[in-house]
Length: 190
Image (cartoon, rainbow, N blue to C red; front, side, top):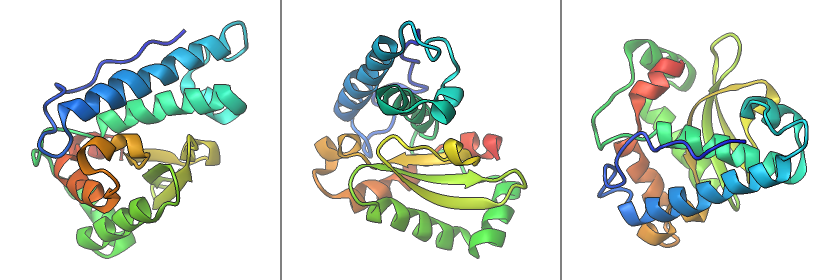
């Protein structure tokens, strides 16, 4: 059985970019529902006490969808922080510049991946076993862990992540993401 992990910040900490009202629904309702559904579906199965990373690699159907969404959301919350308080480390910045040409090019490519993903899902910055960086799009609950990559950053582009604040303006939500990105968390994972 898993529980809803606490947010790593106060519900109003991301304002004006993400409102406390959005977090009440996104975290308090959607994330909680994934936790509750995972616990209900996994009860009495091999997945009941399995680490979520292993659930992502091995499960299918409802157990996968809910377990992956619990992991994805928990990871996403850790990718966020008070506005404009962190920056990429020199080591990560060098890797981004080597892979994408510049930080601005990276932001543009990552933002494009987030904005152009059809339907609901996630945009990710991942690394492989050699430290090479990749931008990935995944639909629904999919996660790059399933393909052997290590996520180091994500943005949730399901409508429930931004609809109360931005309605259908996903590009505005993605633009705001750069103000609340917790580079310290990303630096640590890189």
